[in-house]
Image 1: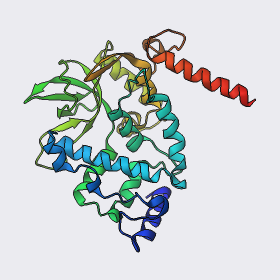
Image 2 (image 1 turned 180 degrees about the horizontal axis):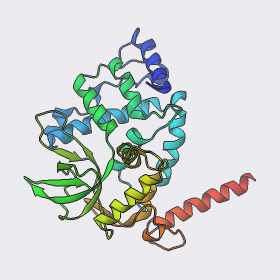
Image 3 (image 1 turned 60 degrees about the horizontal axis):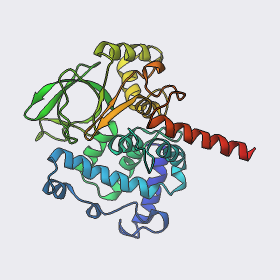
Image 4 (image 1 turned 120 degrees about the horizontal axis):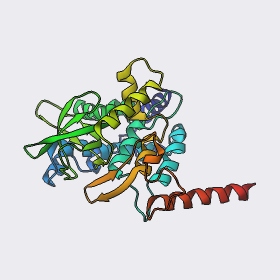
Length: 315
């Protein structure tokens, strides 16, 4: 348990002795939000969601409520100092829209964004206090699976029973996946996605949680070579650990956010199409902010020009 998780546990313990989970005082008023305040799994299934998808969506809602509740606490300042500017930079409120979808960005913000001296995440903090919030063992398991998840690069290997077979390029592991976005793609495509596994033995398939990023132009070998040369420069002798770190955290905080932002080529309603490799700037449509583009770089240039103006004023 990290330092921030311990601080949250101590505060939860203090109030749990005298108040119900829904009646915390002060800044902790909503830390124990009743799960009934959002749709549960059954309600989501009744609304037409796939059962596995419903289980993860219900937990995502609870994590979002938890993040919103604890973000006002001083212990979470380190998180807000990173998440706030990232949201402003990559998820603007108005047009033009960002290629970073909500399903992608919230998973990054809750499960991949590390903060504090112990490199905690919102997910690990919630796992630390879950036992004090009356979370069931099933809820804990779903939350742990989400926290341990990461992005990955997969090859489309065809369909079966309305689901898609994806094979990870490096590990060669195969996953039969339900795609909530509805994008079926084509065999041979490379996808950049986050896969959530089955939560128990009643499921024989996984699911792709984010809108698929269908990678264009670069071949399978191009991506494998990229991963290998990147791992070589990370200085981690354990390749499996280095690969997990690369795909979950990147080489820096906004590594994958920036790649998706700069690699954007075009989109449709159920998929986004990036092109280029993260470490080859010339391959990225927006790797050079000097190039004109009708959507992404224009906003990036405007944002950075505004920041420069503010700096000059302060001087």
